[in-house]
Image 1 (cartoon, rainbow, N blue to C red):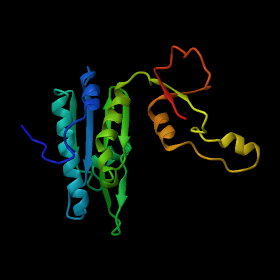
Image 2 (cartoon, rainbow, N blue to C red; image 1 turned 120 degrees about the vertical axis):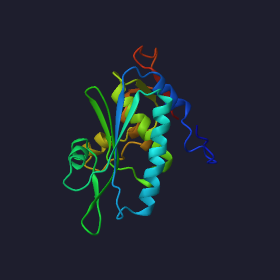
Image 3 (cartoon, rainbow, N blue to C red; image 1 turned 90 degrees about the vertical axis):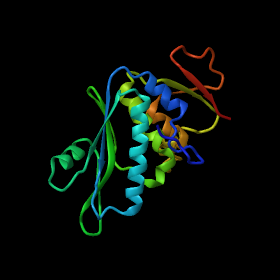
Length: 203
């Protein structure tokens, strides 16, 4: 038994994550790659422990379907080869050494990597892990309809035709594209197509 005493409940899994885990019917393997030597900066050591604690919460909440393997990618080791094959990148140090702190999520023939767990994304750590699990366990991306008079998808094509540099897509649009099939819809579109799971209206 463990109790989350952090004010923001950093190690308490969200309802969304628990819903993803509840749908699992096939084991998901998470390989956690972490360099464990004296050259590892203290900040990364602390963050690695936070990540390990969070992964244990996933394992417990999944009733064993989340399987965790911890690996130390020492130079010229099988673990280092495995990290590179899994898409986990080493971060170079000033001494020319490679430091690893990343993970790979796999289920059957599906695989998703988080090449480097950056402390800058600490508040998004659960989101990143849950998204990776959802990607390897899902068979079809849900479709999101975007209805807006604004250029949320950017205007790259129109700008190219005029020989100018266009506006990129909005950040939220780019993030949605990573996990959903996006369908842009006219403001007066009716009826809503049956293959659209969620409609987002922005004005």
